[in-house]
Image 1 (cartoon, helix red, strand yellow):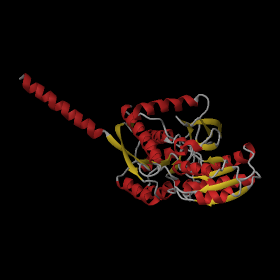
Image 2 (cartoon, one colour):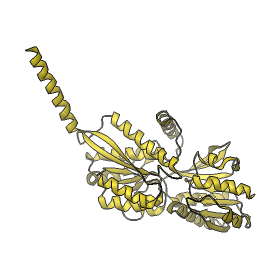
Image 3 (cartoon, one colour):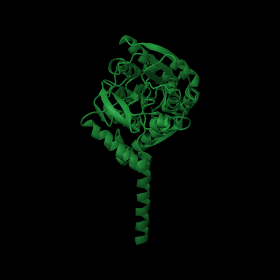
Image 4 (cartoon, one colour):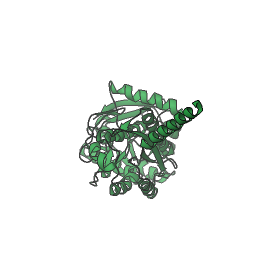
Amino acid sequence: MMKIVMKHVAVAALALCAAQLMAQEVVKIGHVGPVSGAIAHLGKDNENAAILAVEELNTKGIKIGGKSVKFELLAEDDAGDPKQGTAAAQKLVDSKVNGVVGHLNSGTSIPASKIYSDAGIPQISPSATNPKFTRNGYKTTFRVVADDVHLGGTLGRYAVKDLKSQAIAVIDDRTAYGQGVAEEFEKAVKAAGGKLVGHEFTNDKASDFMAILTTLKAKKPDVVFFGGMDAVAGPMMRQMKSLGINAKFMGGDGICTGELAKLAGDAMVDGQVVCAEAGGVEGQQKKGMEDFGVKYKKRFNHDVKLYAPYVYDAVNVLVDAMVRAKSSDPAKYLPELAKTSGYKGVTGTIAFDGKGDIKNGALTLYTYKAGKRDQIAVIR
């Protein structure tokens, strides 16, 4: 008789577990970044942060609309290539993700945004700064960093007013990001009364810059601004040194990484580089960013490269909107996502304007000393 009772108890327990599993909703979060190619170190940095956010969410016992949920990360590689980026976006749409964090590059984020918009799936980029990203009228498109108008403009004014530059040269890599930030830099230089002595072009896979640098050397620039990423900027700085170009080297968040010093090697001298990272915290908010850095390193055994904190916040902002909407259905939680205001993230307080841009976005100006980034100032 006892054996029969125990058997019934076991069956009942199994049935309860099965019922609980059936009641548990699976919420799919997509992430896209370049985890192959020249900037794979930045793409993996982003993907790791999405992994960390999802792992933490699954330990919190979060309920959406009264239902227990399990978060699942679907990660795709776009290699920083627009064509591969749209294919990755379509794959996530076909997988019926509930929301997407990505892409890293403006050049992949912009074409992918139409695919997500057509499917009604919210997309938050942690790092796409080209203004066009949020200017297409898509209700599904958001970003948690300041755009190139702010970033390029700040650097342009800094070159003229703070560095007292007399001759400024510009190089861009012709990507949506590189071209966009270079254009905004040039506008700000001109508005501040600065002198532009040349604008040359390369691409995001180039490694030989001797021809364009030789052309610029003849114009004796005291500042060279590069619109592009660190994988190109490092070798460019080495070739500048070999040609005897002793100019300050400036750029946006694409070059403003811990890897730049390694890529540039002995071509970088203290104080030579001035770059700006979209985002930045001050005062009491610094602790949140520092704490994130500690747990990121504990989990992945290396330091944050650049955008990881913004990915982490973006994942959590998506989920916060789902909780407030009591639904993970994109159509139902999208209006709540758009209303996000006062969300306390590790990167600061997050609120979106009508275009999906972050309100009051910060920038942090950096230089490098002894091969390490050294903060100059946080600017809003």
